Amino acid sequence: MKRSKLVQDNDGWQTISSEHHFTNSHLDVVTEQVRTPSSSQARTWTTIRRKAAVVIAPMTSDGKFLLIKEERIPIRAAIWSMPAGQIDDEVEPSEKEIEAVALRELHEETGYDLAPGGELIPLGYFFTSAGLTNEHCYFFLARPVQPADVHRREEGEAILECRAVTASELGRMIAQNEIRDSNTLGICARLAAGGFISLGPR
Image (tube, rainbow, N blue to C red):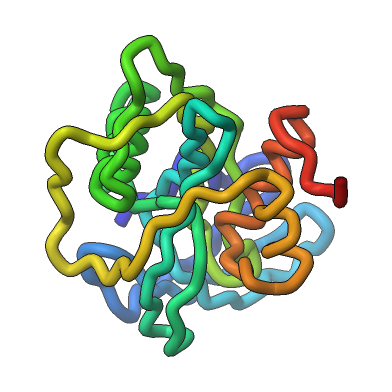
């Protein structure tokens, strides 16, 4: 799996060696010797390389957001989150390709599509767990969305429920730890910082 263009050796970073331990279609586990800008002594680090992903905040015409409740095997729990999905492309995807994945994941996970005349607003990206993986997610606000005529689900998904909540309800769920998915917390912070929503009490 190729390293993302967002993670490159420059400005004093230098990869001395890289040993691959395990690879499948979703991830690559490597141990690297890396020299950092602050030290001439190389450091050893085991990293999980993952493909980039998208996270979508779907907003309905009445200003509510769609959340899905999905079973997550690594944590043995079903948790609330906004729809998200990996970009199945070994090479760096184009902006149009990333947007197409966002719309596909919106449809498959919620059963909603972008309404005619709606907009898909890019909100930047973030690294999901920078001490463990190079995975980064592209954020999008999709508004307004509407129920699809036909819902084409992806096989293997373990989504139990899709619910529309207000921004204030979203804030309450975050405050009470009902939302503890990093992708969702990240996109909510970006929405709030961009002035799209207010998560505080009203």
